[in-house]
Length: 442
Image (cartoon, rainbow, N blue to C red; front, side, top):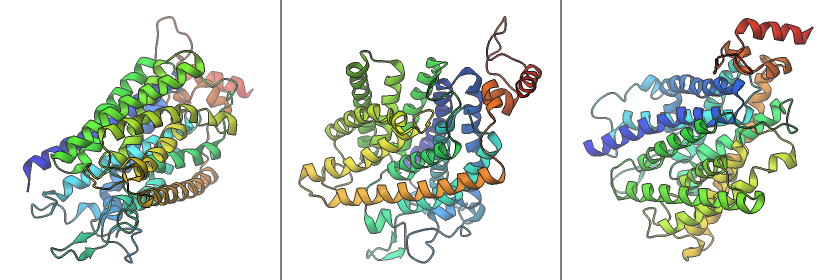
């Protein structure tokens, strides 16, 4: 066992877990004051549901022995409850296998939490938890197997255990989850937004963020945790992790500038919300590419993605789907752009050792990136749509218009985030909220 690499992976796992509360703050600050607790709870709920499912059978489904040798799904029963992974002799690349399992658990949790931003202010909490669990099992665990499960080989290079088809047969590059995390979550977010429909006030009143400092805090925690998200995926404290860290820094910086530049020319001013949105877009885009590009390539990917995502977030007004917090415009679009740009900017001088179109590699890597991205997008969108319709039909998914008007915090959680002296909007007690609800129904 390599104790240094093990320490890095364990530290990175903690950093990635921190990203989910960071996401909760990021999303929570962007909604109205009467919906902030619900956004926090949707992220926290994802930790509870997915954390348990991952330990029971999710890790095994994602990284267990492939069923049928097709690269589609691992054996869910192989490591049920992490059985067989507790001994000191269970190592993967010099680190305890259970450390790797814990690290990957954080990815599954965050991916589910990302989806929630698309349905802010109008989703019931119980049905959300049901959807989160079903989606993790039906969508995330198989896709994680496709993208993250690599073939096991013997000393002669022979395959001893088959991994996922995208990672091995297609050989698309996705270092830390551009497809498995961001395209996957973004496609699901689009499906949920379509099934739940628009908020009653949208698009006439899209709603302004109630607490921008909270949004900035969340973005800062996301950026901090992302160094573990990307750097920890090297599974070693080595040169690859160092290159990934620098690329994550510089691509994100360039994306923020790209977003602000678009805002300046389009709207006449650069905004705080635009800056933090650019940060997240850059983090999304460099996630698949961070091991395959040089720092100059990372700057290009970040700047392009920041500008593209700044333009893409307005698509919801043109196509009339209510993606409340721009999960589609940032994560789906940013994930697609970052994944595809690997095919252009990959350089063999980077740790992945592959040349893209701009470095003499032709179209070979580009088509692989495109097939992987489209496959995950279609699979996630179709299955997410069916799961959302199922939850809607069985238990109901959307809150009533009365509950939406009063505030999802009061009606779903019987709480209010802010109790200010002198009262005011968003500070009603539970009894007062109930009286207002009964009055509106009358």
